[in-house]
Length: 249
Image 1 (cartoon, rainbow, N blue to C red):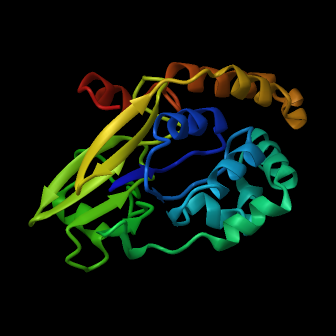
Image 2: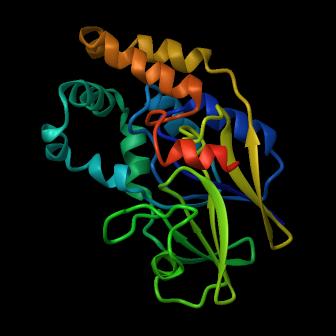
C-alpha cells in the first residue's frame, strides 16, 4: 500500500502536477489543507485535487474563503489578489471546498492516521522543527493515534513523542527554506518518507502576470515572483533562513 501525503498547495498547479506525475502509482492520497489561496492557478489546482482518491481536509485558508470580510483588513495588494481568486474560482472549485473534511482520525489504506492542518491554538500558531514537544503534541487531538500528519508551517520535519510520530510533509506549492521544489511525503508499507520534486515555474509566472488587478501593484507582483523562484515563499527572513542553513526544506 502506497499513500501520497500532500499539504499547502496554495494555487500552484505546476508544483502539484509534478508531484502527481511522479507519484502516479499511489493507492490513496491524504491532503492536509490550503488549496488555492494565494496562488494564480485556482481552477487548475482544484481540477487536480478533484481527481484525487483519499481523504482531503480543510486548511485555515480554505475556511477563510467563505469569510471574505476577513480580507478587508489586509494590505491593498493582498486584497486585490484575494478578491481575484475568489471571483475567478469556478463553481466546481467551490463545491470541492465545501466538501473538504475536518481534522480528525481516519483510516487510509489500512493506515490509522490523525490528520490536522497544523494551526496551533496560541501564538506562534505554526509547528516548527524547534517547537516544544508539549505544543506539538496538541496536534494529536487527544488521541493515541500512532501517526499524526499536519501541514501549515511549510517545512519538512518529523518528531517522535511518547511513542507517536508527528510528521509535516512540507508544502507542495510554497516552500519556505530556500529551495524551489514541491515537497510531499509517501507512506509505503506503513513507513513515512519525505520527498521533493522539481517543476517548471514558467506557467505559474505567466498565470501571475495574467492577474489583472495586480497590474496596479507591480512591486508586489515582482515580490511574489521572487518569493517563488527563490524558494523563500514568504520572504528570505528568519526563521526560514536559519532552518535553510540547518538543512531543512
